Image (tube, rainbow, N blue to C red; front, side, top):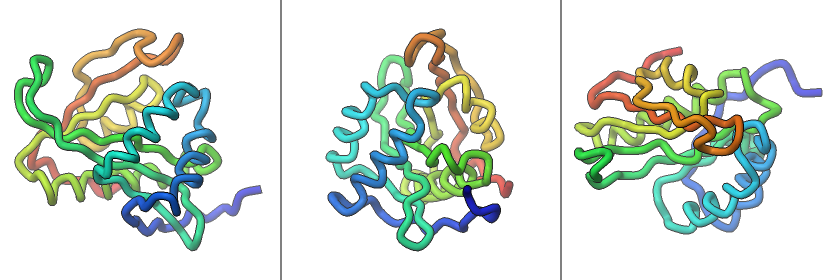
Amino acid sequence: MLPSASPVLQFLPYAAPAHEAAVRAVFQANVPRFFIPEEEAGLLDYLGQGLPYFVGMSGATVYAAGGFAFNHPTPQLPEPSVSLTWGMVHSGWHGRGLGRQLTAYRLQQAGLHYPALPVCIETSHLTASFYEKFGFALLETLPDGVAPGLHLCRMRRPAFHPVPTL
C-alpha cells in the first residue's frame, strides 16, 4: 500500500549509470498504458545523448523523470522550438501531483535556457488534457500514431507563457 501523502520532489540532473535502472523502472511501470515496450530502446538512446534530463526524487527513490531538447526548424515546425521529452511518473504515483511538479520544473528549466522559444510536446490522447492545463494547445492528433489504440497528440505552448501554479 502506498503512503497517502505525496512527496515533494527534488530534481537532479540524470546521471548514468546511477539513475538508469530507476528511470527504466519508471518507464516499465507505464507499459502498456502510456508507452509500448519497443519505445524503451529510444529512451535509452536519448539518455545516452547527454541532453537535459532530470530525475524527480524524494530520499533515494526516483518517482519521475523527464527532460527537454532544442529543436532546429523543420518543414513541419518552421521555427526553432523546445520539446519536452520522455516525461513520466511511476504509475503507482499517478494522480498525486508528481506530474505537475515534473512538468513545472521542465518548463522552468526550458524557459531559463530558451526563453523566447515555444515549447512543444508529443504525447498521447491519455495525457493531452493534462498538458492543456500548462497552456499547451493541440495541433494535431494522429489516430494510432504511437500504437493501436494509443493516439499521438502534437501540442504547442507559446513562448513567454508563465508556468501556472497548480
